[in-house]
Image (cartoon, helix red, strand yellow):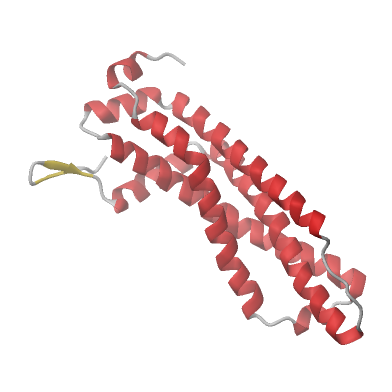
Length: 203
């Protein structure tokens, strides 16, 4: 850990957390894939319905009628996002248990609770960003194909480019929010580990 002694206090910068978080994601890629997949599925479902709703509105304006996404489908999105949070929390808890010794070593070397907390939260943001981008891409393709074959691909080309770009920003922020909420308890648990007990822990 690239920590520095500065005015009598140990500091752990965001750049340090990003570097270590990225390294941990690479080293435990199989575990990271589970979290990314959970985020991707929830965001893909949300993105698909949001874009389809926009396509349906354009179609209704051009052809008449009231074609739209049903409200119960957004209820299913909420369920999928709740499952996403539970899946990420479970995955991060397992990651904490797997890294007991590593966390204990970091604390013995001078890492503070806030440093461990920051490290796990930064990891969750990295995973959320990747999952959000991937989920949006899948949702975009799915909505184009679904609407294109059902109401015509001409509607796709009438959609303003600003709509998917704004949605991309929203879903990335949403995925980061969900991942952060899901990681708070595991990160707090990791931050409060006793270093001596952590070093004694056997997986």
